[in-house]
Image (cartoon, rainbow, N blue to C red):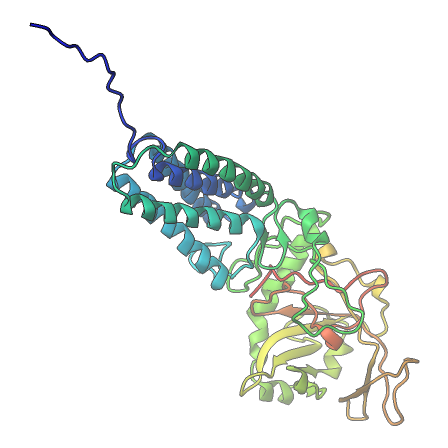
Length: 400
């Protein structure tokens, strides 16, 4: 009797549950998204809740990506899908309306390179999870997709991590350092700016301005502790006391008079007596009040404080340093009743019967959230003239 021995080796067949399955490919994309989120943690450090949110998302994406590379199975795959969908949902919410319960992410932000790439990687990961769930477990190994995926993820994640280090909030408020606040330019093409105005980021604290929260104007290069304290005190006292003038009738009874500019969306009420009393930054005696006129009724939104009439812009005391930019109105023409009735001509003169008042430095203090910070001037013609050599400043990160 003859025995035949089969020496053919039986080699194990790699399946979808192996290292190179679709779940593993999805894991590489999850790792890329997590790496970008991890790189953005530092630039959100001033917002503890936002930094914590980025840490949690990064940890989940990185951990699941590593797990997906080591082992597979329906439970692992489904878990990855849930993490990816959650990350994408949070991104969409942050970009469309903001996440109100996370400090530092309350306002909607424009899509930027870093977060856009992170969202893309997460989305691809979710798609691959769906493919993994729909694919038969016996599918052969996917060495080529794994290799190509790893190369693509490496390139995308690297670009996202570099961009994540200079992530900007709202409209370009770079958090890579305080110099970014002073240098980041924003053309704001969708707004009606006055002729020749250039809008750049204002040197204000990297915290959105909301008077309902503790006033914090810290973190600005070149601003002394005394200037910061002065600026914060001015804002806090104004927010606390200015509400006594909320009713325009009460203001008029006390001597305030409208300058008739309500058609611009903001109406200024000026008090001649308070302008001449030599008292500054007193919400009980403000030189001017600003009302929003876009609704059915006037809504008090700011005080407009003025120094002594005729003071040159360069002579205004440096109360708040870079936090405060004063301005004058040297192109408005008033009638005998003190109402604005036109603008100066090319030679800086008013039409017959109208007069141009002595330019006086002034600054707003807003008592409601403002996208340009607590001391922002109005935009367009109402923005006035700022000190020579400076540009009208505005930072959309600092308010609603």
